[in-house]
Image 1 (cartoon, helix red, strand yellow):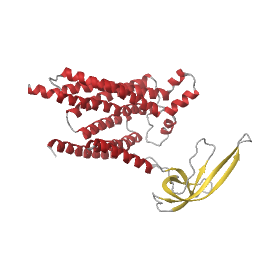
Image 2 (cartoon, one colour):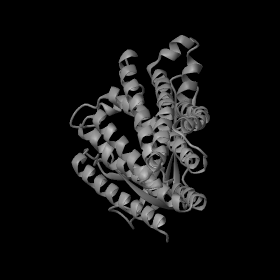
Image 3 (cartoon, one colour):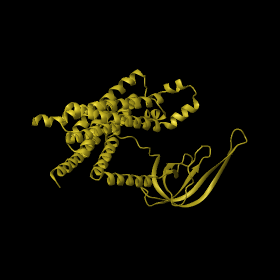
Image 4 (cartoon, rainbow, N blue to C red):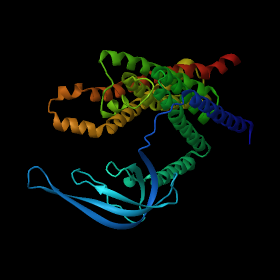
Length: 388
């Protein structure tokens, strides 16, 4: 292993260790105790046999329509939690009043069961809650990681570590901080800076390319944050965009959650990945230019960086907008299908927020391009100036 590879490996190890320490400390600071609903606990289980089906028929108010509901009785083996290993009897109630009902359970199915108290008998019963899809998700994740490593090799490993640490800081620090009642604005900034430094240093090491990408990232995210804050006020955003907003108000936290801050945070966090991608692409390209370009200068490097940035702008802006549209597609279809007035639809807060995320995030990308190009053009020319 040469000195450069050894230094990069050591840097990656130190970045992981420092990140784990910071996440651990952050989790201790932000740890919150949300009351657990002891009346309904969830356990994984595997269906071992189907005991029978109870049929429940009743007529609707029109006197003509008859609904036939089913209550499937089964036996299952609990595979996790306090009751692990127990053979239990449970049921799956299929209510045909709903448009979509779950598939009837079969022997061998992996399921999640609710252990809850019957309101009439007050006895605790086992009831089907959902199919356990985690095994298939884990297989898909394993394939995803394998492809990353196959294509990215050593950088693929650091990419996976970066992804795991990003998920850890979000779920172990950021979300607990919000639920504890800390400032969403402050902790969004802290987490964003942490993700930028951790990801770029872990993947690329400490060098000029990483420094240029970090500076471009901070510039783009800063602009996105400021614009998001201004537009939140100008557009009179309340943060009440769907039923999830109502549930957040009654989640049992120490202080009320600021829904407007949640919207702002989603703009910043949502745009962070795309801005990071653009900044790193430009910094990496300009690093290559600096090594191969003859008679390089600040102006020549800047022009080259801006050319790369212009190509990235189109694709990454589309990526960001399409990602938000895809995430809200069902909502958009529902609103368009029920409201023929386009002006009214475009002024609904849930639609305005999605538009805001797309436009402000894209503005962050636009700003990240020249900021990264300028810093990279300067940084990659400093060595040349010193040798003259």
